[in-house]
Length: 432
Ligand SMILES: *Cc1c(COP(=O)(O)O)cnc(C)c1O
Image 1 (spheres, helix red, strand yellow):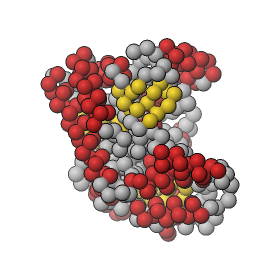
Image 2: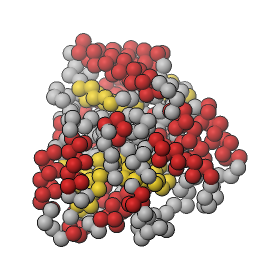
Image 3: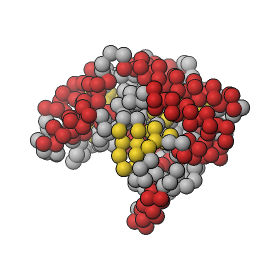
């Protein structure tokens, strides 16, 4: 497969953009080689600048559950744009959208729109601290919640791919307020709470933030009882539970992971799908907590483009289409067919592969043992993943360029796209 134009663009890009990319995971550092420069997308397919076609499992890293360039979403964006692209004043569309979000995710009694997942988690944590008067937060080893300073401690996603324990530029003071525990480890979380129980208020734990299904160390589901334990421990210790559903929201169920696992968090962060491929995100939760947000309360948070009409129109149309009956059942079926198929091909080829999947998000870890947390994820054979990634790419399948990322099946992935993927995997697994 020829990728001369992509290679030339990579070189040009590296001269004027750090690493040649506007987000680190887009560079192929975890797998080697030059990134593919995209010209356009349609349904389950991406087309690069050299004219190659790929079945896409990145889906813009999660938002595109309807596939690329969905005609109804494009139409909604065009219609909104004709009336103006930004006002910095409230619109009816934002009210309607907030009503939809509070209906689909009932734990969000009130919701504030922002423009990225990073803003959503950063704001939710500021709120948690403001509302509790406590400073410490707990996150999961290998959990990723965007790039706010306090969350770049033991972070997943690009930081995991690059093997960075944290980030330069984060002060010791900030990092010291972020505590971490392994995913699925109830005893560790209980011990952490116990250790802080008799501290003065400022030094206690304000909130625990989790991706209710980990996606940014690769897909790692919650063990039975784990989310219940996190809910119980936070309640017992007067800390808030924040579900970062930026990836899982409208992905693992219409009501997100909290609907799928029947756990009610105090605050929820949404992003990715909620913007339908445009920059929209949200955070919200109990009305008494949201009352702390300015202008009602003293916790400040703002945004010039928050509630942007184009982004809200794209999100609104996307959620409307996801609300049709049978959608999540269809995604479950096609995703199971694909992932079970890949697992069977790996067995036939004698390649140890741990296939983790929740609904339409999945990761195939090149590992011998079950992957249940970040330390087991890190035992994967990343060199082998890199070979698999390139073998798939050369056969027209675009996966995330890292072992520590989730793949996404969209509603546009039809029989042809899935068959092509399985055919590619059959050959790729024999060569790795
Ligand atoms: C992608 C992601 C974020 C960050 O969202 P951005 O829009 O990239 O800032 C936060 N949390 C989770 C769980 C994510 O997957």
